[in-house]
Image (cartoon, rainbow, N blue to C red):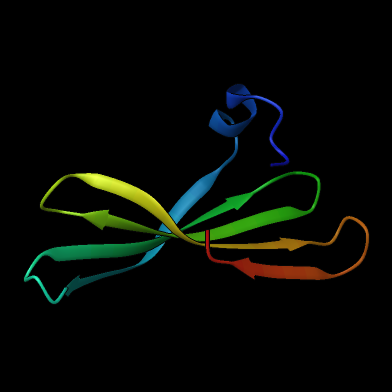
Length: 79
């Protein structure tokens, strides 16, 4: 990961957007949302997270980033 310390993460501006709620096959509510983090060096993260309402667990669902420090690079991965 590009972050050197938790302190760098805490100081990065971020915004939650595109919030969606779904009911899965076991009738549990799952909330999906994106968190956009913009770093000063031209690196952006726009990851999708899943929050399971029944057990209160938040997990990274899909990782997406844009890096224009060394030329255009857009990457999407599923952890």
